[in-house]
Amino acid sequence: MTTLQTPPVAAEEALLEPGRKPVRRRRPVRGSRPGWFVYAALGVVLLSAAFPFYWSLLIGSGDSYTIRDPNMSWIPGGNFIANAAKVINDPAVNFWPALWNSIFSSALIAASVVFFSTLAGWAFAKLKFRGSSWLLVFVIATMAVPTQLGVVPLYLLFSEIGWTGQIGAIIIPALVSAFGVFWMTQYIRQAVPDELIEAARVDGASSFRTFLTVGVPAARPAAAMLALFTFVTAWNNFFWPFIVLDRQNPTLPVALSLLQSNYFVDYSIVLAGVLLSTIPLLILFVFAGKQLVSGIMQGAVKG
Image (tube, rainbow, N blue to C red; front, side, top):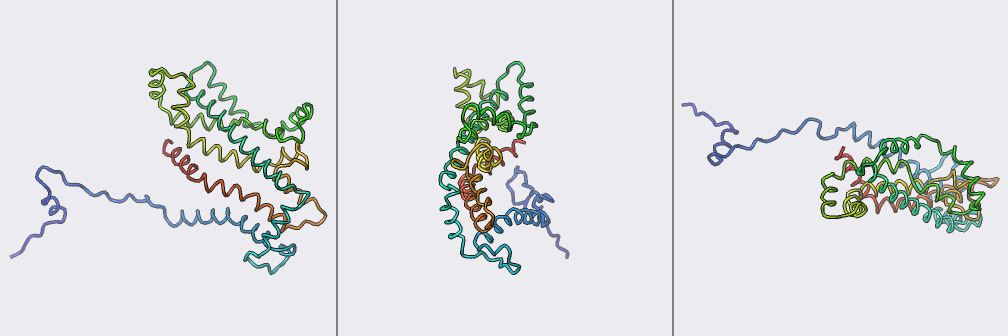
């Protein structure tokens, strides 16, 4: 006598309570997990980004003949601390004042750009006024103007008011960013519903109070990301500070460029100085990495 076997699906349905629908298991979507090609591509990108730092560490931890040695070891040497001490103690570099100038100017520029860009982004995204679209187009169009075109007029202006050689000459032109205005406008337009603004106005909040209580908390991830990118850009800026500042009051990139002004260039000293200049940025990325990832993910989800 042949016994009929109950299919597994029918057996599970029989064990369910009467009137309860069976739960169907979802099949995994094909392509939901990245394959080996994606990981290989990311590995190549990671190695390409990390190799300049490793190369700087190799040369910066060696001596003056390391870069010319055909049998150079790919293991870092033990001279990095000595080379870094030479950079710090070099009287031509003025390391500590240059480091303070870079920290002060970059932090002030980042805070100013975030503040004014958030205000302008709120106005363009949520306040209705005549000509707002054309004004936003004009602001975005200024991004197409090369920075080099404004160097001569800016230098003549700061020379007339006696600011050449002063740290304010690199802070004032960078207090507002067209990219920051565009970035915050697009983010606030998607992140802040109009219903929240209407509810705040019904409760009697003024426009500025609505901005503080509704706009600022919603725009915090984008503002953190903008602050980080602006700080890094201001920190690495070399062209304009090299023109308007002098050797007595430089920023860190300008001060480190003086290591190459001698007849004989010791690249172990130069690259040790380069690594010293990247340490504050690495510390900043470690502490601000969470906000950076949060801003990227929220922007991706909001489309």
